[in-house]
Length: 164
Image 1: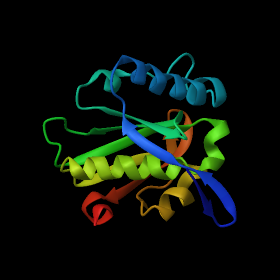
Image 2: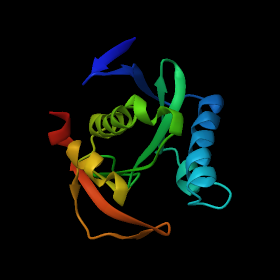
Image 3: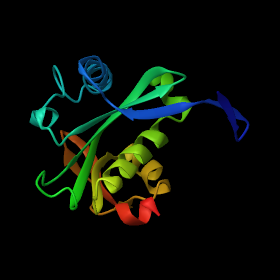
């Protein structure tokens, strides 16, 4: 289903947790496409130990049923999911960037962490995306600093307030 937003047609976006090997492969393929092939942030892959941890959640965003973006989230202390969470590896394929998929991916991550008892979510946000995150209720908490070799700003959001 398409919807009209400010004179533009937006396709319907749905976000869900990755479920099974095929979903995880899709999730990692989208991250590789954006962070390795397009942006050159990582040399071969962006896979790290967080991906293997059972507390880490991998999200897939679909536009009209086609996977177009992903985000990863996890509690900073896996033994305390009621504490702080981190959202990272937000990636939207170029052909889906005008679909509005980034917003539901971030909102899904925030709502999921809140539902699981999280208090706050942090993210290291590329400078070009600061305004996007501010519009979603995130607050900058640092001056720009290098994170994986690229200037980022640490931002956070109160999960209880965001869920209200």
